[in-house]
Image (cartoon, rainbow, N blue to C red; front, side, top):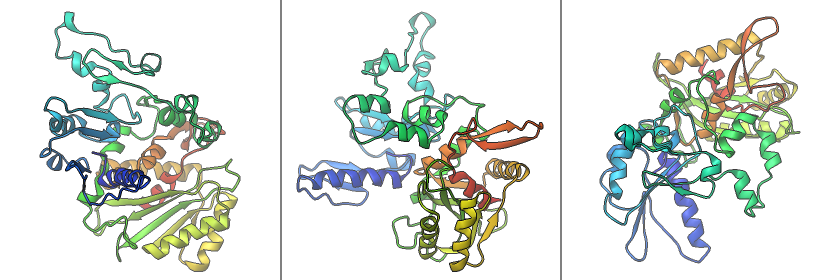
Length: 379
């Protein structure tokens, strides 16, 4: 079970590729049947689809789903029989997430008399080698540094640090939880906006040549330089509401860090072939953004450049907060990087005392930018 079925199908694809390396072809849609009769089912986080199976249960990215307690109770029952196992794995989200009380033992202890409660040590020093805790559950923390130190040679830690803010690096790669109050956006509200697109968006076919058919979409784009030292550019595809007061849906995001501005423009052009694009908005505040706009307007003359000021950035964030509180924005839960982008937005005070927002806790940090294009579309 993954946060969304699209993410579950990504796991299926990895399994199929691994089998193909030993000349075994695995076929199937929502499930794969092995030669010995065993079945692998790939589910999203809809409790209704998760309660009818019996088997080993694997829960992916459980710190990034809403209604975790309900899902754990219903879906976890699949592994009730002796000999079956329940395995949950995830990057951490926030300490206020429902799953955190299970991770740190608070949920287990709250049902115990005071003299029977036991302390759970869930820091890296205790858990990096794995440990069976008082609730008879084995816990382990594995960081990117752990993997590299054990011989993994395919990741450059310095490059990953450079691409992320320090807070993002600690959260995504060093298994540290986000504390509430540090971000302009409440992480639990962000997670609550996520849906399983396969089940909830009947008109969305993510692997089709035209994922939204002929439905109009808007594209928001924040460009970056080719050096990789500037902002981490991204494109967001947003489906606007069909009726006034309806929901905005972010159906796809793509990062384009390190691309020359001509290549960035080609990415936008590719999206115009896959979607019925009604509007393109480009952040032209920096030089590269304007350069991309000059190319884009050749094949999409209606493209609009945006130049953001301290005041307009503040307006952008406040409008997005309003849309979220009204329940008017959705994204597929597989778009976890989009959530991280929103969570990186911080409220700051300028030297003149003006309140605005920035993507990163300090000057020089590289912000995540999928949220900027998304903001502009919804605004």
